[in-house]
Length: 373
Ligand code: TRP
Image: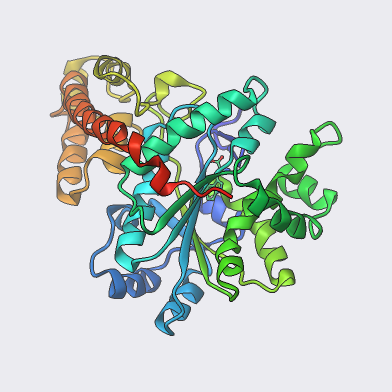
């Protein structure tokens, strides 16, 4: 693949993503300073993911704030495709979603698309995706969502509610639209072609529940945007609002380039990894430092390509001043790879251990969160 080539679809992310290009290709709006200012009026402070432009684009977020300011409260909707264990990259948009829930005191619908992962992953059975769904739900609960305001459901288990709504959406989506948006072929299985209709439902489900239109805000990794591009065309035809969307960048992997990907375990820290495994993965991380310590001290490194630096930036260090110190130390050559990695490993292990405790506690909270019909 040429250096400047990258692919971002709901089922494939590869290459070095150029987010400015993506904004144009997807037809989404950059998150502007004035809009961030409007958000801050309501939230008082700004989440580090906003401050660092990791949440970088939107659809109709200005409209959503207009409605909110008129007293028309929104709800949140996000989701997870249970193709394996949760990794740190998955947690980022969830942590941001929890922040929004706390700041605006709003309800959250959390969709688990076990159907999707069964249909799209060659080697996963119906049993596999269900098992991962319940494993992933532990991580979702561990993020700290409010059980009174958060409802989680599996597509295959909540189908009595979802299916009658999904067919209303499906009737407005043609095969040629799904081909154009997702690149499906005549050989694609028919479940895949139908799937967007299911992912669209939670974007208006609260309106169905309440019997009146309720604005919806969807925080997501930008790879999921195409589903909602389609949904936003269809929903007004059914009499609902178009959902607003906030897009986040994809957390980079540990071995440089691309995003953290579950299909490449060495580039990825799973929430279920043992401290030893976390340490080993970080030891093998790509730093982009010079060939020898001597050269590194003399020439310095590049924090923009150093995955250890990027991990602090995306995940582990919320204090902007400290991030700057770490980046400066990398750039000046003061910080050598070994020490750099040891510091990060310590941080990561502490995080994972705490998360795993919360994850265990979540086991007997599942019933409080799950929607069944
Ligand atoms: N398809 C998503 C995935 O593979 C899961 C998902 C369902 C989702 N609904 C969503 C993600 C809404 C973001 C927002 O992970």
